[in-house]
Length: 565
Image (cartoon, rainbow, N blue to C red; front, side, top):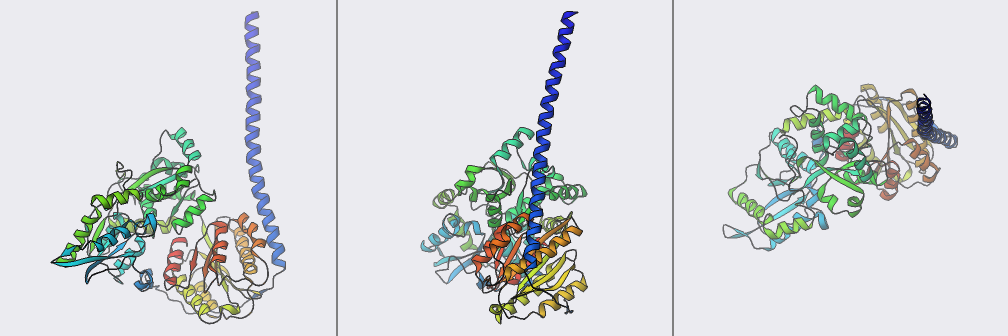
């Protein structure tokens, strides 16, 4: 009996200790969570107070909007492509008999991103002959998505095309352009998800191993802050899109099951980057636990190898080579000889030195996907990427004296034409600034009426006065925050179109902390601009910056709006 009482007493004591420990842990977790929530709320409240204080110092004029003429059937984005001279070749032909090749940028850039450039120059020096005459190649480095648009539109056709992966070739075939696969692999490469080492180890402990299916499950469960690139422009982004859909239904990536899974996955994606560089900057800022990249790039950045673990996914990125159109026998032979030169031992040794030809054991984890399916997947992504958010954006246009003439004309043209690619589900407003700030168009759903008012407001812009850019950002931000109060699901964006030379009103330092707290991305488009100043503004919340002094500004803006809105 005595022994029984003693055991009972021991059990009671242990239970008491367990309850105390549980209480401390639970209380600690709750306290930590509450502190985190409290700090976030406090940060937002402080930013709101800061915004209201700054706003009181600004002269704001309300402009009566008038309607302009809207193009009900906007042109295909491909029709806005600039002349191909905007993208000069990296290697120029050295003989009268030659072929031109479009090449993806990871192998036609500089230093270790210039493998194909270096090989092509060696080829042109090697006195290779066809029919007794010396031959050469011209290499035009151009992003795979952009190159695909040139080829499909027929605006410019090279003799051959080597994208990062075969998905682009399949899309071109599906669009009715004559194109044939000549070589599946010039240099080996794979796409992958980079996870921070801490997050990787955490997921391994939970899932046992890491693959794309586990990663998508972790994202859907809100265990990872994950970013990826625009699948309309990025080879890795497009591969990631179709591969993610495949994890939900490997037999049909466009099935209801796949779409439902993707919607849940996309709900917890905080960030889709316009460019790979933009995404890498976001990762370096600590915003993301994971992002996507090609292995060749990963191999060449020691900081990434130190901090992140690479997990391959999707189709391989082996730089296939396609013949475009019906090539003459001579051009076919030049192409064959160039491929042979790329695959010789010396060229392959160089490729390995530049970070290619790694992870050769990796086999694609998804079935072959035809071009029609890829195109439909892109459409699905545009429709579903913000399924739980309502896009709300304000355009902030510089109408100061320094914008008079050609800069303002370019701003108007690019804004009116680019806005044709904004979804009617988005809500859009317009602010302009010189010495004062004008609200030219309050935020409204971008239906036909709002589009007409937007065009009329843009057409009415005229330039004079000083440049109070940061004042205008405060005003636009207040408009966005008021919209957020009415609609908690609103996804807020700012687009600043300016020459970047602020000389009046508030400063970057006045608004930087406030904008960081709000987390509103500021996309900047520079006209005859101080591009560095605008890039600094965009970097506050990892948005893209575009130089509008180039001929492709309408295409770039259309692509940006197509991806983000």
